[in-house]
Length: 315
Image: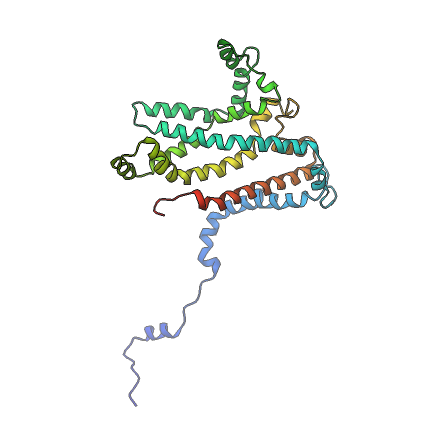
């Protein structure tokens, strides 16, 4: 038999014989967990706990001042027989159905105009973005003056061309269209996103289309809009979520009353009134979860249909 090879130093042979200790999950990640702990605690305390608590409260008569009793699905049953609840649903859906498509149409049109190579375009972009910096309360006060049926600027301009302007915010017919018009005045943030999407479209496509003799409409239809659909998709989802959570403008305009004839009583306004005016927090929690289900269903529908109309570069 050949003698064992003992030419290796003793400490190397010892290292080979002793297996390395595996580090625990905590020892590997403790520094990252410690740095992320403020965010984790904030997520648990301010989001997770209230979220799961609201699920339980929606099945109770909890009123902030009293713990309430467990009533099962009674809050949901009462909501479906509440006429003001259905009125608020109608007003919110009306606003979303008209505002979201109009915001996309006007947003894309404005972005395309602001994307032209014109001298002083930075000034024009700033002017269109400024309304988004105005607080919603100040915005509501401004438009209350503009749409005043007696001395408002809008009716004054209409009278110069022989048209008697409506009562706007004082009319059941015109109150929601007035609110849609106010909201469209502040779409500058969406326009900036569309401008970023337009800047991401390569010029090579337009050069090739120009060589083929395409006019501006053909370029817009076959190049700009298809390659802008990812941005339109994003703004569509965000617009639906924002439209169903409309609160500040109608609440300020009507001082929380939803007048005239509850035509400006929106879903989140009624939810707020139940929770913090009438202290029916269990009822309000049920409303919140119905709204969550509606928004999630609409968002899922948009995501499912997006495979047919959203086009990404290189695909």
